[in-house]
Length: 266
Image 1 (cartoon, rainbow, N blue to C red):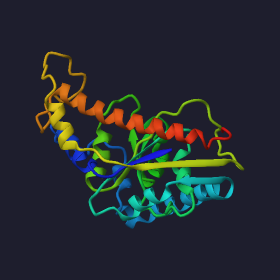
Image 2: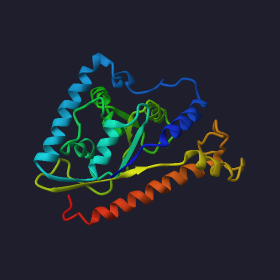
Image 3: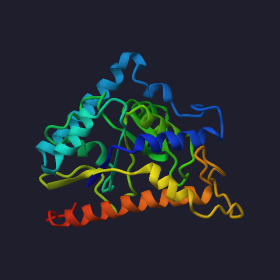
C-alpha cells in the first residue's frame, strides 16, 4: 500500500531544510559516499547499470513469477512521469519485507529501469551500508543512509530534504513488522494499493501551529529553539504531529481497504 504527496511539500522541504541549516554551515560534510549518488558520477553509467539490473529483477519477480494487481496505478504513474518542473513527490508505504523496494516497482507499465525517474529511498545504515562495496552499490541505487532511531535531525535527513527541494521523488519506509521470508516467494497474488495525492495547506497549518503555546521552559529534546518562520519547539511539534496524524489516518484507511483483497499472506 502506498500514498502520494505532491503539492505542499516543496514549501515544507524548504522550511525544514532552512531550519537545519541554522544548526551548522557545513552542509554535506559527513555524508556517506555522497559523490557516488550524484547523477554525473562516471557520466551516470554505473547508476543506469544498477537500475537496469535491479529493475529487470523486480519485473521478473513481480510481473512474471507472481500475479500482481495494482489499484489506482495511473495516479502514481502520472506523478512520477509528469509532475511540473521543480515539484517534489513524497510517497510513503507500509513495510512488509526487506525487498519491498525495489520489487514493488516491478509492476507492468512502471518505468522501474529509468534511473532518472526513480525514487530516492531512505535505507537503514546498519543493513545497506555495512561496508564500502554495499555503500557504493546502494548509493548508485539512489539510497540515502539513515540511522534508525536517530531522529529527524541527522545529517542524511538534510540530504533527503535537499532532494525534495530539487523537485525529486523521495520515499521513506515504515517499520517492518513480523518475520518475513528472506527470499521473494513465487506464484502469489500481490495487491498494491495506491492512494490519491494528499495536499497540505502548509501556510495555514503553520499559522495554527504558531498560535500554540510559546513555552520555552520545556526540554528541547533536539528540536531547534526557533525556526526561520518563527515557530518555537511547541509549534514545531504541533505542526509535525498534525501532518503525521493525517498521514497515519490515510494509511490506516488504505490498510483496511487492502484487507478486502488479501486472500493469502506471505
